[in-house]
Image (cartoon, rainbow, N blue to C red; front, side, top):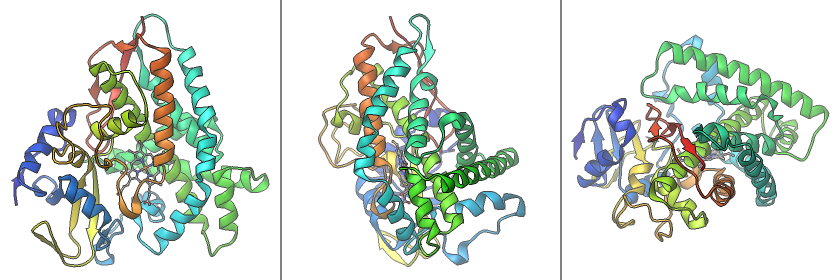
Length: 389
Ligand code: HEM
């Protein structure tokens, strides 16, 4: 197996990781990434197969559980009930409760509000001088939409953003004591806030996702209070950051390539071409030989979603942004039992918000070369400075 070294904190790599994925894929479906000490899947075939392979999963095998220091317990206590970190049967129970509340009718019903919100934000764009389109457009839409879906008041949107940023930082390659302390403080504040909202919803239930989850929690066999808290935090966190950066990366690509038309196929191409989440891992549960490598129980394998999306065998000329491309589904939302719960909502937000943006602002252009934030765990822009003539 090909062995490669590449620091995930190298700024040049973070700005453009795709040539590294190409080098890795040239050696086969799997390669060994020295810096992570892990086998990684990088071809579309291998990533798609491993995402669906039930002999591996997200939940840590009991004998591999790390010892959690007391000071980090508030963070990991929340994570312990996250469906993303669990396997059946608990995963199935939690996920089906969310899916039952996350109906296509409820998602489609958000369409007019997404369009209206996009237009209201566009109305406020400055007419002269450069401005940051992440702050003015891409960031507010997903947070307001997820608050609306859950039934959480949007007046604390800024707090929600900063809590979730602090929590997500725990997954970065360069984790420091300061990052850990901030994540714990954010988790405690987030938990206290969600408990307040839950108490208020218990008194006055409404037609929203949180009220529906609370109804399930009142029958303790369906959902515990800890699971209710974690699920609310998971949906609020997962529900905005990836959408913000897909939108930011997508608008950047559209402006760089001169494309203007947003339709369902161009949204898929945006997701394929430059997704925000590049790497997810799986724990191996039993010995299995795949793509010429024997995995042992307790191994971890990384799935490079963004590497799979640039594989030339399913996607000819993969580095070309081609808005009408036909081909197999991209893996930006994962696959198998953990396939993103929010994919239909994220697709709708991207379609409607970016559609309104390019229709209303035909002269939108870049005011400076966009730069990605210097972290590998979230491939998103620092800012997106644009102007409108
Ligand atoms: C473009 C935006 C988004 C991207 C690229 C994205 C990506 C992903 C990926 C790759 C996974 C699977 C991870 C794995 O298999 O290990 C996932 C899971 C998940 N996503 Fe998303 N997501 C997005 C938007 C959303 C939204 C809007 C929501 C909520 C409303 C959401 C909620 C979730 C949840 C709850 C899971 C866990 C599902 C499970 O474990 O069964 N995501 N997402």
